[in-house]
Length: 252
View 1 (cartoon, helix red, strand yellow):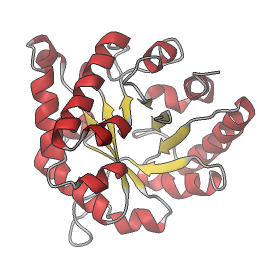
View 2 (cartoon, one colour):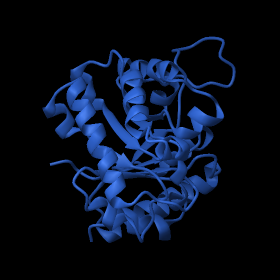
View 3 (spheres, helix red, strand yellow):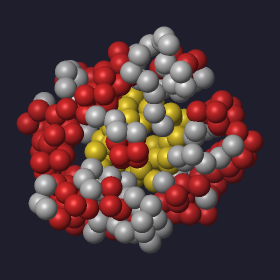
View 4 (tube, one colour):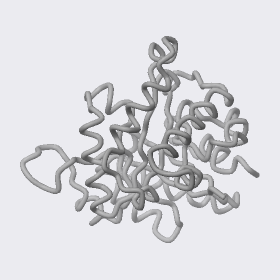
């Protein structure tokens, strides 16, 4: 049985003081509501220490939104895995569509980060997904196949337990548009079948696949009811306790 995994990607929002206060309020609200899901928040780098402190003992995972593909060195402005681990962060989001589109990160580059994260004993939320143009031209499966095979290159079967996949249709991020539950589940099913071919049916069956794309209180129940949707990677709605709480308590 795959435990639901709900994650909040704060993107470039929340100062350290605001993030700490928000994290405290979120933890209190989740506890009071009896939330029974695996929870994660991913603050900006500078906000991580304050959030880690605020969430100590709550069981809520604090993740990074990105990291470099090197352990150390002359990489101005970058953050290494050891730096994150020293703060108490052991999970990192990699391959987010904004990293791919705004900063031109390739599958080869993302793969280097994935392999380094695993080498460093970290868990990875790996994002994949298609643009509207790619979907409308019938390239959904081609895009997902290319991303998955490239991003997971040389990842060993025994390390797949450290990988969560987040399917994020790029056209549905921050636009208010959402793939229908049926469309989302179909994409998730394809991802699961592709991973089964890459590895095994058992690994695919146990793989957590989140949906990311304008998830909110009004659509989360329908999405989470689908067989292959195991969680959500939430953007804007994760910046408000009032909006995020109904998502993390979708089953109540």
